[in-house]
Length: 352
Image (cartoon, rainbow, N blue to C red; front, side):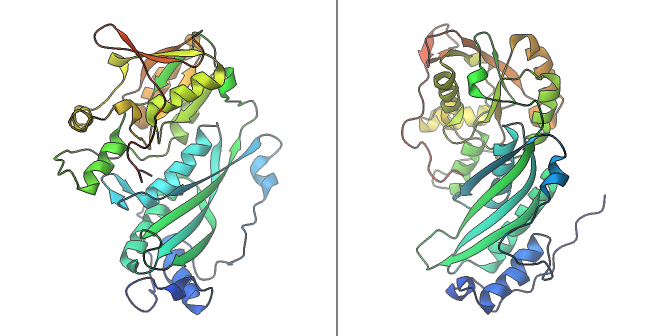
């Protein structure tokens, strides 16, 4: 496969964003046509309408439902080991669609730029978005750009919204969870949170850890083919695994038990947590999913997860209990149990 050609930029005058680039006039047009559109794989000939026109019948055919989601990204720093705000904005929204069983189709991209943001940084982030969108098989079809005065934002914030198609017969809902169901995780916990800590440089961490930022729609499609009775799926992001499990337990009125020895955590991440007094169960992730699967389909589901590169280290990490309703417990290395509550407060701000 031929490599994608480098986009040809025609940067606006100067080295950085200024307030005129958000004015709606010629400077803004120059920024969009000279930098943003080329980075995203479009051209100045692309119609700049206030909306994208999508042939719904062509996408839907005679079955399926439309899924729609939106999210905003304010990660600090903009780049980190394993990704940046551009890849995060694409993969995060793709995954929000995918965990509902949807096939992601199109995305929007809205930018809030701080006055003084160097064009070189903006180019890099836009190219990252374009590359991530190509890898995920989605198109960025509409967007918006705003510029705020220096000090009113922190370099670059991105909002993406996404539309996907849920095939007929796919209904993933927390209410479907039943006692005896198995809890499956597709890999190591806490990589993204640890990567952000390293990138911030405040703690001089000597750790080789990469963010797990990746799209999950491929592995989810494989899971649903192998285990069509899958109850629900959730991407494990802010608040970590503990928060997702508590949401599941409370929403379905069931209990849940985790087995500590079955939860994959890299030694380097565990070491960072021990030094800083953090718990891997609450660290953010950007490429992990938790699936609740009927016991009789758990073996096939695990095999399907492990057959995908995003699920090499997948495992069954626990089970659903009849009760007490809303309670999550962890069976520890030492044979005892402790209650796992939902995250209180913010363990690490500006994580995504």
